[in-house]
Every structure is written in structure tokens, then in C-alpha cells.
Length: 128
Image (cartoon, rainbow, N blue to C red):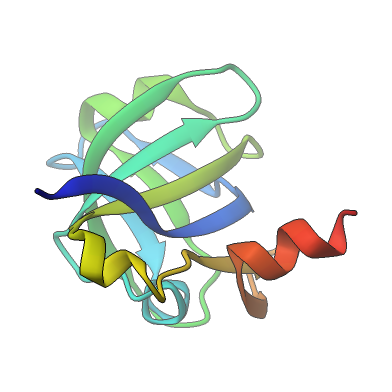
């Protein structure tokens, strides 16, 4: 049996734009995609911290180190520049794959520049 688990997330990044006239998706700085292990065109869930909106779309690579996080197409109606978002991807894992599994968390600064890559269990322990 496979179950669905969080694979990786880019935590608390800032929307830099919303382009209604683009053909859908979310543009994400390529350096952040690489750090999280998210591939171009991979399905992602986007959670807008400012307004509570959630959407599922796919990732498009923006230029590396550009800091760009932009909602495109219909998704552009769900956020504005300056909104804080969390971008997550999931994976189907077997019991055997879960034995040594921990989701990856990409932490960024207020300009969406990579600060560090952590693993979820380490972050939870740091909060205790």
C-alpha cells in the first residue's frame, strides 16, 4: 500500500507577482526548486498565509536566484505581491520507503533567497 506524505516545502516565501494573462501555474526561482527537489511541471500545493487560499497547480522554473515567486493564470486571483505563501509537494510512499524518510524544508529570507535546507524532524526538535 502507498500513502501520500509531504515530500518537500518552500516555507514562508513572498509572492513577487501575479500574472493573470499567463497560461497557468506558479513561477518559482529555480534555485529554490532545486533546493527543495521540486521539478519543473511537478504538481505543487500553494497555501497563502495572508488570505487562507489553497490551490493545486504545477511549478514553472523562474531564473535562478531571481527571488521570483509568481502566481500565473487563474491562480493570480488568489494572491497579491507581498503575500506570504508555503509551496508544498507530496509523494506516494510505501512502508519500506518511510523507514528513513523525512520531508525537506527550504527556508528563505524576505527576498526569497535561500537561507538553508533543513529536514522537518530537525525543525520540530528545535522548537522544543
